[in-house]
Amino acid sequence: MALTFTEEQEQLRTTLRRFLTDKAPSAAVRHAMDSAEGHDPLLWRQMADQLGLHGLALPEEYGGSGGGPVELGIVLEELGRVLLPSPYFATVALAGQALAASGDEAARARWLPAIADGSLTATLALAETGGSWELADIEASAANGTVSGTKMFVVDGHTADLILVTARTGTGLGLFAVDGDAPGVTRTRLETLDPTRRLARVDLDGAPALRVGPDGDASAYLRTVLDLVAVALAAEQVGGAQACLDAAVAYAKVRVQFGRPIGSFQAVKHKCADLLVRIEGARSAAYHATAVAADASRELPLSAAQLMPAAQVASAELPVSAALAAACCADAFTHAAKENIQIHGGIGYTWEHDAHLYLKRAKSSEQLFGGPATHRTRLADLVGI
Image (cartoon, rainbow, N blue to C red; front, side, top):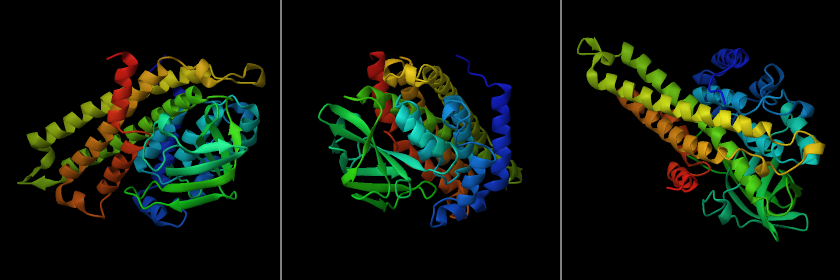
């Protein structure tokens, strides 16, 4: 598997960075995060119509561009650099990947085209009131075409048109599609640390639901989906960490103390150098994981004649690389956000400066789908330590 990018992939990064520099400066991000929608609907449409970002990693037969985890990782890394408030992560990285990997032709044909053209927002609901992201701890239940239970920390769950809910059945775990406005669905926006990414509580009381993905116990399929999600989140965290390093270095060049730029002081230089090493290590882990995920995705079912559970063909290396990337990138982003504030000194603690927004995103995303300690424990189990 290659850890380098093609010319087309580099062009994607350049185009998207230029687009976000123009459309999502700090003032626009702050305005969007404080708005009623929590994002800029016009920018959402431009991302879909002008850049085709929503369908970039989806199969061509469902209106996508036929890309995969590598292209999705590039997009998320750039979105993470600017902390863009957007349903993109929930819709494409969570729900889109879950549907694409499901092998469920009817579900993919029904919802993926709408995700690809930006007309549908969606999300994945996993954690419950206990706060655990482990599949074994799921208590929500599904029976007779309905789902009941409570889901917590659902990314953009208060506004998503479609909610993919993990629930327990008589034969094991399954994934179920629930209309966000269906009877029996109550959605409550949560007050959270990160103002740039909204979370919700979703209460389900006999909500009408449609099974998605393999029948029987779909635990293996859901585990593969969570690995793909972890890889996507790691890419976003790398973008945020790099933005923190860039901001710290830029400030160290212009902030003068004792007649010299603070970047000339050994303590500050060492901080920046250590940050660079840590972020490059995290980037390598993330890029490796996206390459592994891309190899696994190429083996996933592509037509009705090839349908089979994704877990049967996913690369055995995917769980290991996903756990490694999740732990490394979460740690790197949080550390970079903290050091960025330290290097900025007093101004870094003010509301007017963006440094605190990166720290809040770092701490919030660090706990999504399990913290670094959880991923390290899983990694140790996978490699037999």
